[in-house]
Length: 125
Image 1 (cartoon, rainbow, N blue to C red):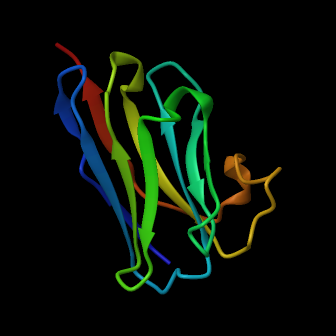
Image 2 (cartoon, rainbow, N blue to C red):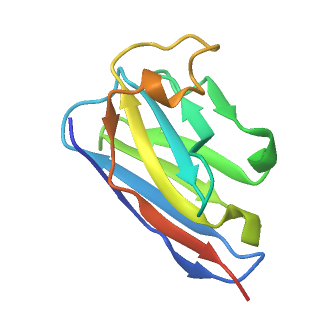
């Protein structure tokens, strides 16, 4: 499985962006996630969605602003980001695991086998 992330850019605070992650193979049964890494910081979990798309998980700082979704017919993962702030500036990576990760593992990057190349999101006035 290869993942291709896109949709990043330079936006002003309060703006919205939608990131996409296209998978080369069928990922309908995979656990999919978004992580991000800001300059000088460690990679952090942002959001994840299980195969059925009913179970979604978010880090506290993005709850109510970001929405993760998936289109299994298109093998594509999305991250709708609203009310962006400078603290959201980072390279965003999509990730996939063929396993149905349990809740306690879903936020850990080492549980994911496949990673996209990253897309830069910069929020600045």
